[in-house]
Picture (cartoon, rainbow, N blue to C red):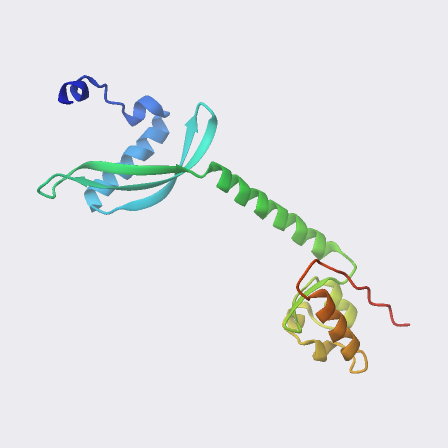
Length: 171
């Protein structure tokens, strides 16, 4: 019990982390004690396995009289999640750049409206890119082609496995 606890060596942040990281951890702990508030933050730490990102919740540790006597902390390694988020942002940036550079018109439609179009499509159809978004099909598609267009849209947006439909070019 108490004898074993007294013999246990107290491990400090400076024993575990480089000085600048330990200082940041200790500063956050001090802030928790002063503000007497629980906080959640991300900390970037060096470990033997490489850099880590941890989500830390820290709060004031109180004695039986309610006086703050220290801090408690709960940490969760979110390194992989942060890497995945970074990879997703990079992929989105690449896809956006490719769509912007394409000469073919590309779009995403929802509820019979254009919710996204790369710059080529509105240009091909004589619209300004900013004014094209949210236009309904009826505003863009010639009336004689609207039933066919709507039918094909309903076909490709139906539940189930993805499908594609090619639209013949008008001559």
